[in-house]
Length: 166
Image (cartoon, rainbow, N blue to C red; front, side):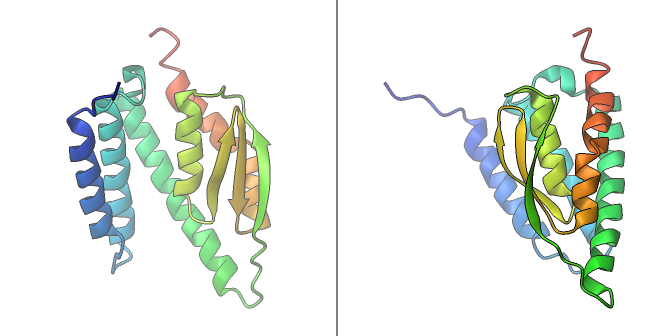
């Protein structure tokens, strides 16, 4: 028996394709953060429509706090990576590493955390297995920052605080 594809899925895929085509080649410094903000908003909206993440993670206050915080992280990471690449001595030390999080397998916060890492320049999530993330960092600083669990704690603070009563 074949599963029926929800109508929203192909429409969502087309929206994402068109949107990412537009932002794939930003020509200005201002455009990147603005388009990144739109990408975050559209991603959360599509997750809401497709019920990919429980509704309790969609309070306006949580989303605003997350949006402002992740934009700040994107800007700070961009500055850090620019320093690494344009410095007199190129200190690119790309390396793969693993971290174990407090998030459980299939926890929406694990998904948000992994995607937040990928959104920040200089880092990306390669794979997730249970509560373990396999990551890549462009520099030792970014690797140390992730291993400090600062980002993980911030995501818990933003999203988990309002979800305990849901």
